[in-house]
Structure formats: C-alpha cells, structure tokens
Image 1 (cartoon, one colour):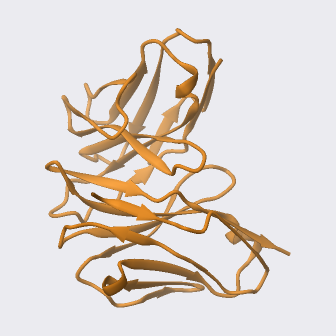
Image 2 (image 1 turned 90 degrees about the vertical axis):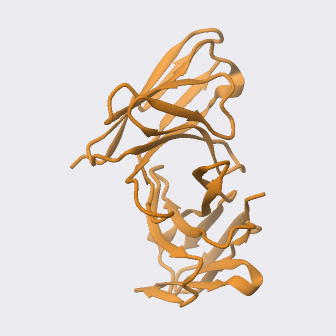
Length: 116
Length: 115
C-alpha cells in the first residue's frame, strides 16, 4: 500500500532557528515521485519541490533544502534561519501508479509555527 | 493565466440539499482531480479525470459525482449533502507527461459546511 507519514503534527520554533520536517513513505514501486507542498494560512496549496525515486541528490533552494534517502524511505525538508512567513502547514506527498492510474497520496501535514 | 480556479469559495448547505462545485483551469491540462481536506487527515482523492469525457473514482468517492464535459472544467456534485461532507475541497490539474513526472497544481479551495 502507498502511505506517507508525517509524524510531527505541530512544530513551533523561534524565528531564525533551523527546523526539519520529517516525511517517511511506503511504496512497493521502484518508480515514484515525492513532493512537498506548503499551505499558508490563506489556504491555498503551493508546490515546493518534486523528486523522482532515481535521484537521491539533496536539493537546496535558498533557505530550503531537501534530503531524500531511499535506504530509510525518507524525504525530509529543512528550513534554515526560519522566518515568520514560513508559518504554514506542510504536506509531503507520494505519487505512484495505483490500480493503473497515477495517484498522489498525501501525509497528514505538519503545522509549522515560527514565532518572532 | 489564472491557473486553477474554484467556484464558490464558501458555501453553507442544509442536510439533504444538493450543490455543484466548479473547477476551471486555463493551462490546457489533461488531468484534473478533486480532493477533500479534513483536519488531521491531509488531502484525500475523491474523483479524478484523465481527459475530457472520462472520470474515475478515487479514495473517498461515496456521496459525490463528477463530470468532465469540457477539458477545462471539472464539476463535483453533491446530490444529498450530509454533515460528514463538511470539508475544504480542492481541485487540482496536471499535464499528461511521460511516467509520473507531472506536477499537480491546486486551486484555492472551497470551504463547505453542511448543517
């Protein structure tokens, strides 16, 4: 079964601290994609990153970085020097083929609060 | 480009009433999806469509129907609303690309309350 687990329901840190959001996934597929989405208080879902199962290189984009490790089935997201604007709910998602169709399975989300 | 838009943004229904949520995309995407978001449960797929005139069930399809008469529109219908359908509904769309490389882009959501 395809499953994504974000064990951290809520995280609260003080501005400028680094914070890591955990994501663990389960799949039997050899080809799959992993995603992170951000949902700010305004409610929309914003795409952050996509990573395929064959590319284990870490990715850095400004203050954001992602660590993909197939050996532990994890795709963790780190925000460096956090800012209040980073406060949001963050979703990790897994895409694979389920019953012949491509489907995106979401984790439960982690609510991140950055305090000034 | 407006991207993915949803109508309405908010709606309150009484149990047993019906309504239709409209999703529109101007990106010429083949695939479209309807999700619901409930507290502590992430997003769950209700129905999806891989092209005009085709629809398929997702993870939680019961109580909902969909139609894709035009490529740019995907309608979600509730024939007889129930309080359990109180949720935030998101529409998404994506291109049909080789393998699994497409990224889903989401609309702003519709907050539905069923009393």
